[in-house]
Image (tube, rainbow over all chains, first blue to last red; front, side, top):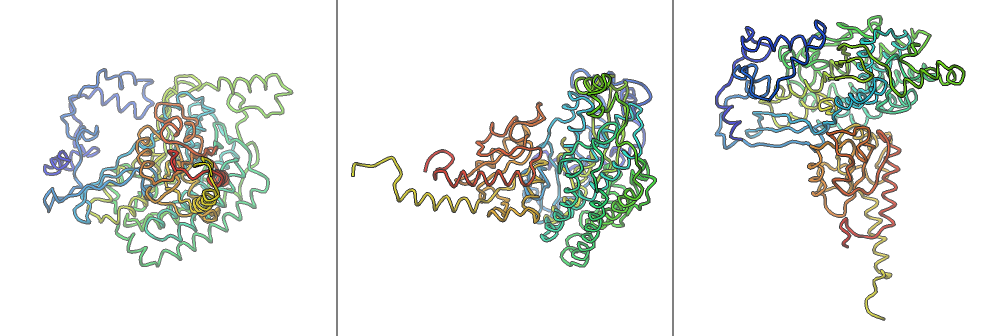
Length: 476
Length: 161
């Protein structure tokens, strides 16, 4: 750890050189930066990628001398959050947490540098669940793609499928029937509830409220039962597909959803009764793991974490999808940005999601549950026996898939953890040329040092649980 | 009496039954959750499905206190050495249950990043199919493993008594 102490003793940068805070654009490599900008926004020019990414041999670029760029590239380390050492470097201890640890919510590894009980430095180490999904997506057709992406953030499978499907539909210019959109909203909002319930269960378990764990799982099972009835699977559904959804809602779904809403509403009240006045819970969450709105913006943290810091930012309001703007709901925000506010925000979000679900239930339009464009969705099984054209469509779809026009598209949805975005590049074939995901958990994990530095070792678990990272989402 | 027989006698078979009964009904799993399957594994342990009915509710965080490693989820190349390390830390007797398609065969991810079956790293006693396997599937796998232990000999994983 000699390199760490070296960088810790000499401050490398002030706030002006942190990425996103540069006072002026650096003069070197302007052309490459310009290409990079185009690559990010994606629409100005088609395929400037060959110039942007073909760097030849991996040599150090001249901009490596620029501290801000070096930090962005990971060559230099931002030590803003390391306080001045008050003790001898020899008295610092390194504690390794994970990757096999019950409270790291998967296979995250934390490298903690501590002085006594105080944490002075945190390094999250990721990649233990790297599955190569973005690469695998290049070998799967668009019809098969949802199967792959649903396994990324495995607590929010519907949101993954939705972001993927919306991106492909954007490239295709495909309109989805109203009923399909309503079903999508219904399923994603229920998924948000089930994900937050699991979060409440694990957050409670991690800081010692073990009964919360049992209650959270109990209510989550009611959601999963409905998912299983609708999609056939409890998780990893592959239900929301390009062009609509895989199947219509089952008979009697209104009764199921109504009883589900009733059960969970009562459940949320019970949790609040259990936790809100619990002195141990309050002591362990209030003022712990604080993030300011500025820090949230700097680190790209979105979702309930950003809203707990007071940022009123919800993609369902700012960038609505699937006609979610026609439903009434509020965006809860916190004040302090600590673990307790995140808890409050998530609890309220569950109520708002149930409110949306109720409205969807009351106004569910009739009609098709998927697009009738036979170039995209397969014909009904019965038609294959009757119509030659249906047979051809079916055969083409399941052997070759459908082709998507050349271009690039980005579409994001408000996942339970924040902005979940899918970036797709098509070269006109039946498979994506490149797929990349903007994972909210990734931003949350990179913000862990902000929350944890200079706090107590015992608060690590509380802060980590409140970030609600899913390592499948981080590593993909 | 003609020397020492290789066939187990009355004493050994009775002891075997007793030991196997004890091992079967207090098999503590190590909490080795990796991905989606880990959520279903936790769900199996929670109130709704209640793994405690089979003497297995205590998921041990430390591998040294665990008898069964449920490999729940996809094993990446980076995770494989860690997995082996955890397995080596477990005390004998120990068993491995491979949960789900990814842990058993690599599943749908036939690519550079994943170990194509956890049996390349550790010996596996029971495979549970599914993606992810539901709690019922996992419980079926666990019960099958318990039956296997109950009917088996008291040997450790290297075949030595």
